[in-house]
Image 1: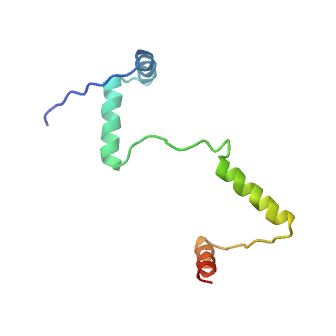
Image 2: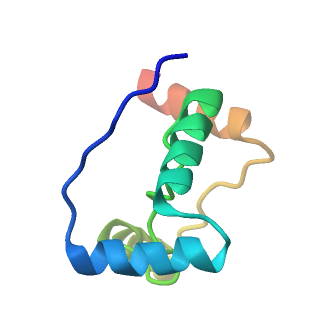
Image 3: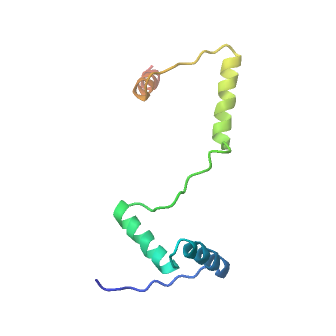
Length: 97
């Protein structure tokens, strides 16, 4: 296997702090970078947590909760489903009407 060189520009503070984390676990940045690429190839995915924190609901969730509260306050009972399939069947039947 032929070796390749990777050059990247990052903030010097970021590099220093990342190096400290890698060294804490017994690695250097080159080793961590190789491991990152190997995991990416193995899993066919980018191994980063790009999700949002569940601690604070986003605006869409807050709006949905407020809407549900209004429905309940106005005597609405809503619908309960035993499975996602049952829910989707209900939604499809409502769309067809």
